Image (cartoon, rainbow, N blue to C red; front, side, top):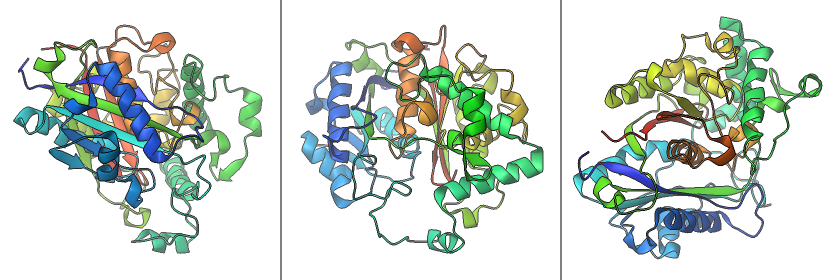
Length: 388
């Protein structure tokens, strides 16, 4: 292993699912301090900082957060790609470590989306705020966030025969993973009666197909392999990272069943020198049950239009061949506005063997796939716990 190989040495979560005592910035601070303690370092050692506040307000930006944390960064990044922001900054973070531009980088995120009454829970924007950019034209057609995802789901059903049972399996799997996570919000198995009673919010998406809305934050610390040898946690190596944004608003989506995962996924796998058969677990953004199905197809774990039947043998469940979202995901654990960083935190927790009751045995590799916007900006990071 080269001395400047980037590795993850610390992770931290803030209080969730509801934390009225914390602002979005407070979540960033709490998660960052916990990640530093986990890594066995002080915040004064951090010389690179990457963060995007949930609301994108002036005082939730990376510069303000860095100042509150007492950092003096030589690299700062507040790139905003929605829920995939943490994955999308990883290529730059890894390269900064390799090149010597930084020695230790903190990536952090925080949201008070559930507790902050000044926010619109459906968009994360200030109430009565105006939509900007091309999204304003989508809104004229009544396209809320859930309606946009319902449009994608409906098209997938029309083209490929995807069914409600296929969507339900994703929701059931999330609950079974959450049952093994003491901190998860929805830990009880999803019963047939609950499935039947779940109301449609935007056909074909029902309440059980939608992520929750929580408060929460997360932080992840990268440093060099050389520095990691003196730190307490088992280092986890990000082998590769790639992103793609073929569109932002759904009005610019050329094909409702094809996303940037079909570009970012193969690129990341090629960089890592791996195939989908080498991946032991998936941490894929599950804003809605349709999201991981479309992502798995793009990433190459199954053919286009085949994700529904692909998941029906239980392979996404805790004891399945390809466990998905082992903390319960946004469907059953938590979803504080933008979930990307939590995918990577869970991957690291699993690969270093510190996931407790939800630990997946003998896992060596994990793929995290963040989705920002309306399956718009896709970021993929592949991790391993094997040095070599």
